[in-house]
Length: 262
Image (tube, rainbow, N blue to C red; front, side, top):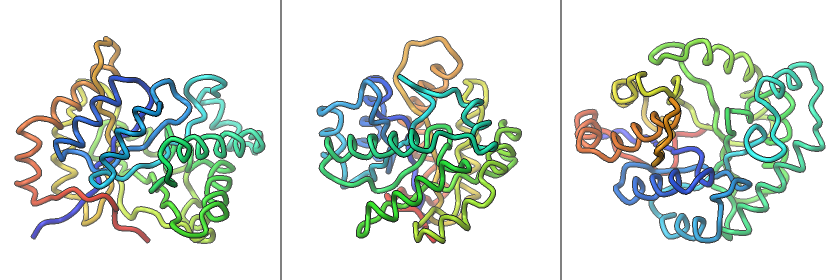
């Protein structure tokens, strides 16, 4: 029996090479969602139009961003502000409104879902703004939100997963209070380094995750030499290749645009 899952590529709009890789993978049927950084340089009318032309095959979301690009806050500082109740909530609200506005301006549609760059949608203080905005702004056709609750094992970023789970304590209660749907199962976290064994982890997730799971990934075309750049290209190459197609068949998986929600 075939089981569905959503495979979502993050960071559309960050760079042309990332956009190109994501569009190619959607065309190959190897992705079923992407989340967009609407204040980054490669979020353009042409890029948005290319996504809209593929909207029947891929869900389109907002990748809410406070830690990358102009006027960014370093992740460590943002986490500290969040935990200590020192966030500039007006700035967070303004940034979210601006990014949603830019998504809608170029696509003509509300996002299908909202998540966060470096999972900031889970953080105390930020999550309340995200959830309240979704509840109030979208009375109908409300986007669902990514619940980033990775397993502690099955990848090489156990400490990061523990930290994210701690940052996300209370998220599910708040999400339900705001009547915002969220995915039931999530995977995709790892070190984003080329020697991490992405293909082995993905094959493990394909075999073990429940029906309707959400897996994030970070493919991109790049000639950069950083670990992240090489990992992006490695992801792209593997997702486009025959081995991934075979893994989908062997695990009896099919890609869908909407995860199992509650």
